Image 1 (cartoon, rainbow, N blue to C red):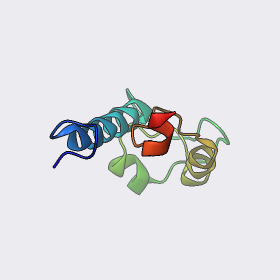
Image 2: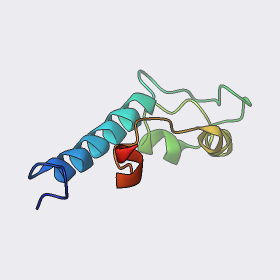
Image 3: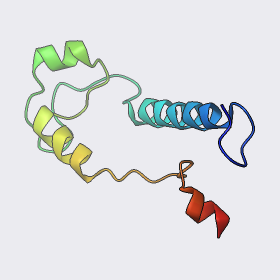
Image 4: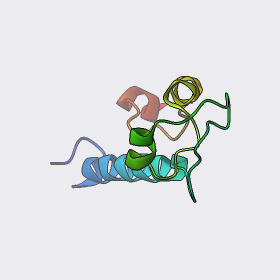
Length: 87
């Protein structure tokens, strides 16, 4: 289904690109390499269950939650309204 000035499949391509960008950003945010027994931020011991679940974990749950809360997502908005595209 085409919408207005777009060709068939253009909307799905935008959705696919947005999902691909989100997956790549999430993979880039994963810790690489070996994990740590102690949190790099506060020095507290990282629980064994967390180290098993996330082998590359370098922060405790509370420090990681604080980091995740500060993360700002910036990217291309491929879903602009028709009004913004006509300007």
